[in-house]
Length: 348
Image 1 (cartoon, one colour):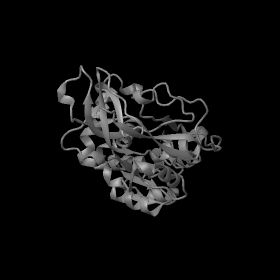
Image 2 (tube, helix red, strand yellow; image 1 turned 180 degrees about the horizontal axis):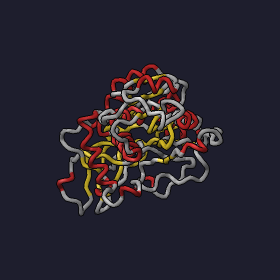
Image 3 (cartoon, one colour; image 1 turned 30 degrees about the vertical axis):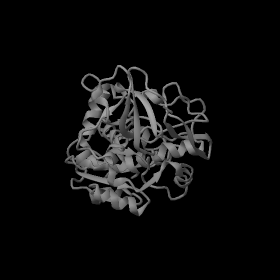
Image 4 (cartoon, one colour; image 1 turned 135 degrees about the horizontal axis):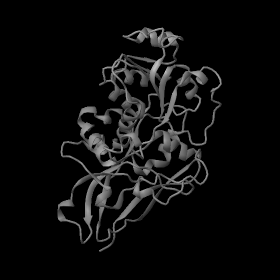
């Protein structure tokens, strides 16, 4: 019997994407093969890779089995959000895995092999277009955990891309004093308010925070006016860190979830930051923060994320759906001045 073929997206060089057709791999004795139904593009990260804005010799995320040993150098296949069904079993894999719907951290590919330990089985109630958004929702959960919002706090979220919107959605469930978001695009500000933001703004001033707050700040706490207790920098632009510093109050926290790649900007640490006691925290989903590791593992966090799918319904943020064969056009469009919010690929 002839082996099945598969389609795989590859970036041969900066500003270039192609779809390769090749033989699909056969599973080893303890592996399964998965037929992909959907894969989600990470707009921020994959835009950087497509445009060549990644540091030289940087390793890919070593916590993802499919990317282990890979450097972010060209040619490269990249991605980490596939959902589909198990269609072939290795000799030592239990028959109950056949037909199981799963999520996997895999590049954009129509068929792939994996150990069962690297797969996330999906509940029967999960919609596959919700499940393909698991990495973005997991990132939002990680950001909220790292920020540790406190009841009554003033929280500011800079950037309302997919991760910013999902972070806003989760924060809206907390009894905060106020939740203000900032994004230059009107369509994203409208979505932000739908997600539960108290107010969504295109630019920000201290008076905006003060007017939005249900609980005015005490002058003894913040002598410079109303500033956020907790700020998330999710805009993807390093210069936005200056805005975060400017609008975060004394002893406040800034959680940086953006990956800037090779983009650089001067950061003003010589002004009010010097005496502000502001904490700047790097948040990245590939690990669990040390303060949680006594009780939390990545598998526990992922189980929480899967349990949130029906409640959050992240597929509402999917704006574009393309056949995998159109990948070159999709990445060209993604790199344009008006990028798509959340595109996904579909597979036959």
